[in-house]
Length: 280
Image 1 (cartoon, rainbow, N blue to C red):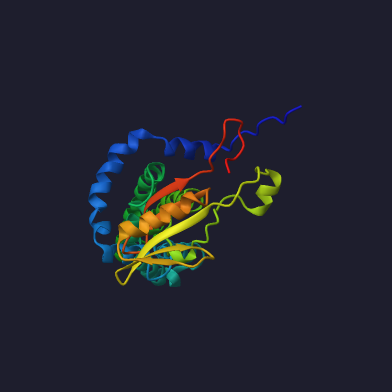
Image 2: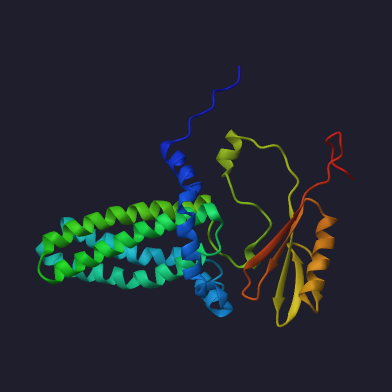
């Protein structure tokens, strides 16, 4: 008797609805126009998306304001009167550190697909609410209203927690995070080993990946574990990559811009004969 289908957790159902909420598309389009200056300049794009670091900067920066605000909350609850100045300074530090965190987050968001961008907009709203409440909390503390500041801080923490959950969905589920192409081994991310043992997938041939990139005005075609080839123009490099990929199905060609991040992708699946077997 076939096993009954397991019901999806409520949060999973909510996130799937949020990803498919076309009602958010006008907002997404609006923010796409507003954030375009962050990604049109190659130097700014490489800086904000972390090419110099090897991976996205945004997840690293989020620890700074969230850590400061969480520490302030702990001091509010258990630190007593003597800890109030330190709590106020931590709230202020978190506000200052929010600025670069926001900018790098929008730079990552601009490269995401539409379902992730819908989640990202709500993520941004939650975090903006948290930032606004923490700002009011800091102002209240500065004026001597510690209890008011503490209550505002607790409300801000709840908003930040919501934003954090949505942010983890973006990085862990939607995999919205830039990384340097040197780290791309062609292996796909997904279920961990334990999940794969419980839900075995049919065996599939590994997908060969051919990366087209430019360095010192020389275009290269690189495949992990193989020798690279050099070409004088992007067109020649792409043509060579596609020829190699077509002969190594299943495969894909990933074209990188001058900043190193992927700009285009073409996949080549295995040819299948009418009887369902792979064509040789």
